[in-house]
Length: 209
Image 1: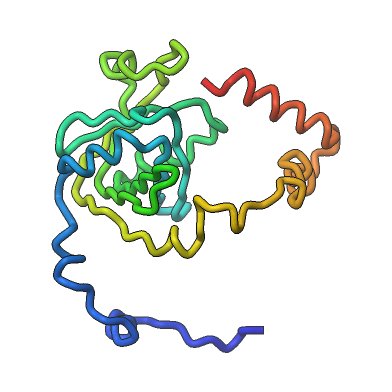
Image 2: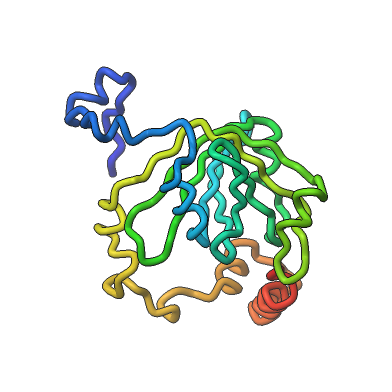
């Protein structure tokens, strides 16, 4: 099935099916964080981080905490603290190899999104980290982003997905538990599903911050 698809190979072939973006859509792209962008970031409890590695390819990873957890330095710089995660460090390794970064800020209940692109550096400077604690614990590291592009993304995707409505809300019982899925994927010989789930619950309980 679908073995004989035709694929686009040039920008010339890409543009014809689409109308040109309006002058308004072009003008909304900024090279800085204006007051509206800063206000959006200050209220966003979730940011999706896009990065890439020259050998490994692309990666997307969520970062979340209470609104205001992303620190805005000025119109051109912001910092994202690293809260405990899975310790794979994929995003950090990517940024060390390629500093290009893309950010997507999300506010629950709001259909607009904020896109920010730029370059990133990693810092362990206590001067900054000590100002970004959660539950009394400073982060081990922060991503400092120099902004090159910022613009508010239109509402169409979230309106179509009805993300903040109940229309497509799934009963959790309709999916296997995370422990079951990991057991099926990793097939650990010495752990039962129950043991995996117990480890996941303990990690969330003890290492959320």
